[in-house]
Length: 394
Image (cartoon, rainbow, N blue to C red; front, side, top):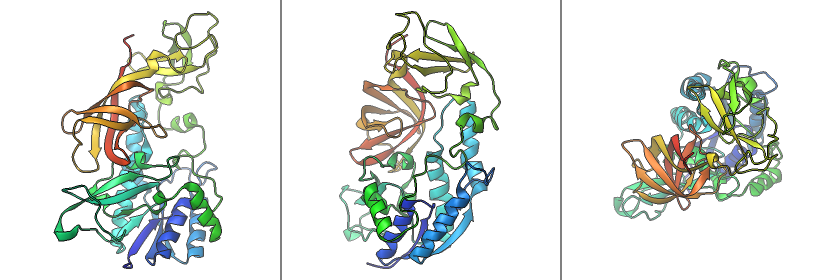
């Protein structure tokens, strides 16, 4: 195999550490970069970037590779966090990890790596990239690192595939990557299960072999989410109502709630039997709707209440891995991470919008989240959910 210069995003976690090890083991010249994406309260108990950099540097030392500390905080604030706040203020629930991958890890980081003379970049994401002939869709030979070309000079395209570990697959978060980005990306641990990644890390003595997985984006960390948003979004308390219009309590501001939310509502059960659909007298409450105009939070009892189910959605800001939308038809879909693929029928609506109709109603379809399409193991792309159609008129 040809030796290449590959820049690895070392996060201080076990996945990126094993990524660097695997590539070095294959004989490549590996350079590590630690990305600093957040500076506010960087030294607080909630944000672990300083600890993560120490761990990343320790990994680099064990592997015998160079590591560079690069600050992308300004890019992150402009490209990701500003949009994050705009979405929350509009009452939607954004997914900053999706935007971070497209704008920071595979744009700002990729550009920086190319300036360092890298031929590829690699991260610890659980996903895979496959190179296929553009005309036939058949996989073409490649060494896994050099830009692949089909025999006889045929054009190629890159497919984003699910990671082999179904419990860790992260293709949902990568669905906005384009052909140019995928042509430079490597995801070595996407070929492995998490248990195997930890086994390899322990076997070669990596200091992060047993480190707990990150549970969120750094600027929120483990702190209460409402406490964090309070700094940037003003409170506007209002009524919490049930489907019959009864006031059950007061919310702290619609931006702090998301559809399907069960915890942190601060309301008890309704003592009147038969007052709820989809749940018994003491069934839990769920956020079902947010009326921004009237500043009202609507809640229902029972996980399967009709207000929580949608038969269709419309999404905008579409991004397709192949550069163009797939043909109308039936595909696997996800409207949230860690959801099993659900059948959905695609109808393209304009340059960057589409509609999905579901034969089986989907639960808590949330504006601001991503609707992502799959053809088997191939992630086709997706868009940002703008609105959902209730499963039943109410």
